[in-house]
Image (cartoon, rainbow, N blue to C red):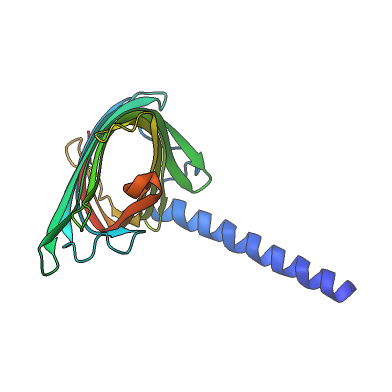
Amino acid sequence: MKLRHASLAAIAATMLMISSLSAQDDASHCGDGADCCDLGSGCGSTYADVQLVYLSTHGTEDYFARDIDDEAGYRLVLGYEGCSGLGVRFRWFDFDSTTATGEEDYVDGLDLEYYDFEVTDTICICNWNGVISGGFRHVEYDAYSDDNDGDRVAFNGDGVTLGIQLDRYINCDLSLFAWLQHSMLYGDDEEGDLNTVMGWTEVQLGVQYAPSSCCGYNPFVRAGVEAQRHEGMFEQDTSDTGLIGWFVTGGVNF
């Protein structure tokens, strides 16, 4: 038992020593001995980025998305962060996939668009820097499967959206990146179904490259995997649709 306790203590001490050395290495490598939770954003900044996504369409019903082609979509983000870390952000997303499938040229498709207006705040969880957000989303969702009966849902709704974005430096210019956004949406569809509810979840995982600032501008590039799930909307509001693929982002802070 004593040997087991001694081994656990040795492992814990080794982990603490590695963590301490890693933190010291990060600070010395970046030429900055600041606390790991010092976000160092300065007094106010504006940022903008443009995202290109290339996604494949999926559905929980086997006859939906039978052979829909992978398609490109776009996301635009504009925001401002004040001296205290509080800020505001606007986000727009557009995606449209439509493909004729089968011998009788059935048409399956998923046409999406939304607008977000959010309040943001910066956070830090030791070596992870991030932004939390909450606000309003307006969405236009159109999913259709032109099968024998021709199923379609065209939903327009509004609701609450909540998100978190995190990055963790690998070195001074390169970092891990993650984004999670979930929206709770309420509205009506064109079939006359009133008071419909919808859930919309988005995830991005990837890497970010942000070189040293030049002339007051801080450019960055991100790339990775994106996945989405649109819950409880298709086929009598009991089925889900989804997207998965990759994204590339280019942006600047100034």
